[in-house]
Length: 471
Image (cartoon, one colour):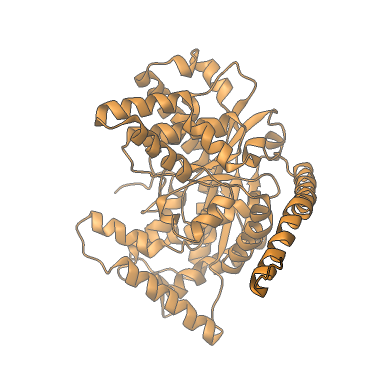
């Protein structure tokens, strides 16, 4: 008996047979080769980095999610949620699954050290003259191993993520807590691949907060190097904000003082000659005071269009200096020894009090290493001058006096090219280009309605200076 098959069916069968052969023989070999190359690359990275990439960052995301979903404390919180909301336990566990998938990163070493590093380096250096200022190298080199290192920093701009990741790339891979603003496709995929985890900063959902807490505990216990902004958001007036206790409390709450791994907080100070979002942040401040400023969106559009026009004319310049300082590390183990009590066994109110003290200590350490840059120095001089007009020579003399005040307060001054004249020129040029100061008959004064913008920059170093005398 002859069986006749259509040609298309024969071709389809042949393709399926070839695919099965590839799947059984070739694909496993390719996977093995790729896995071997990735492992070799990771080993080379770990030899180069000061702080190794911890195994938890390299664990498959699905495994981490399952560990988080079935964590005993998460299960307990899900049970409480189901009872309180009068819903089936399966509904509560489904919420846990969605929260775990939302929070958990998907770290990819290639995305971080190749794509992420290349992108952050290009963006940072295209916009600013990036500088690494003061670094307490001896203390950083003597961080005991194994330890979980947590970089705590002030939050001046959304560029902070890019800038610090770029400058810290020779030391380690950082894991950030990123707000909901970044949960848009395809940005969230790239951010998650760099090891960042998403946080709903204003959530009051107890079940969500428990899942987040357990992830932070898991990451901290696993030695994942993290970067935290204790202020919780961008400073709108340029000054340091009061710290939020959430993420720091999660770390402290699960810390075992007798355990193998210490938690080391490293204060990081960031400052800019130009904050890209400054006008938008000042608008938010005006709204709080009942004013009705122009919408932030239109302000942003004008900023982009203005810079595009300058680029087209060949008159565009980078936005001055961006500088990062790394301060002296602080050991949580030593701190808990001073407390004389295990934080895991403290009453909630007592622990919150201690965590509050820790957060204030960290903010003070961050403030101490915030770089003093040309624009904040020149802006402070003009604010102190009030309506008085200043010549260039008077301006330089006052900047010298201001630098002495900052140094006496323990400030770290970044002097471009180690040249005072150049530093004053850079700061003055930036303010003049932005029409914050005006030149009239050889003398400079503050432009009308620009006092608040100048104060925004002056506030970044105000804590390093003695209080202005009152008349």
